Image (cartoon, rainbow, N blue to C red; front, side, top):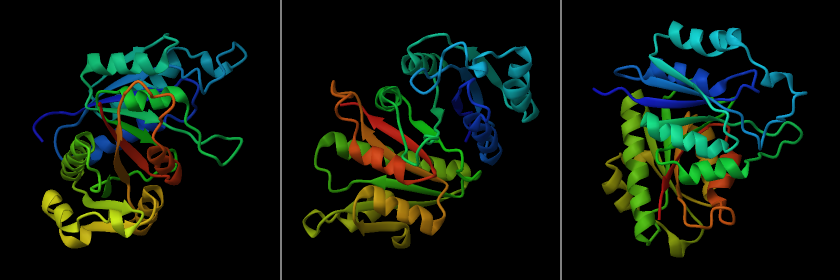
Length: 274
């Protein structure tokens, strides 16, 4: 790689553990080439955080910025910029700032709900996934701090042009990041019945991967991907979703939601705008 990647890292001052920033620092040490440039974006997700004055975590001083953001990045030798947003439109402010920064990836910290085991994803986060012009990496607190095994989840039964294009984007990105991290790449395609069995030959041809790295499994995408991730000890899952089409609030994309909820791994979501 000759060009430094630009990582846009979301930091929520309400958090005591800044998992997206930590992952950016770890990943920068794994990249085979120039270290990425980091843009730390400090903003509060009002959908997920108590924004009343009784929340002591919303009062942060210069020492907090120094200890939690500046020192860790400087000590890792990472070139960075820092921005604080007071916008109440959390996801729009992220998208706008990431565009100005010309980000290659947005690193977004994701926490499971504390009062229940059910994974929860706010509407604003879905709007970000559907609207961001670059891929969003959902950073999980218990994910592994390495990038040795990558899974790309595709849907080769898809007939529509936008879905065919999305498959190409997923494979291109997956190959790029496998090369960037020196990782092992696997491609998986789930199917529900024999009538929708994907063309394995096409998968082999279009990915250029050996047969043992291609997985065509029966079942829902979320189930087959999470089972494979556990079996091969995956560190990153790359998947796609169709972007803004005027129905974001009513059509989240059940496959994406189920898959994100089913794994503890970091997930890169690539959208394709219709």
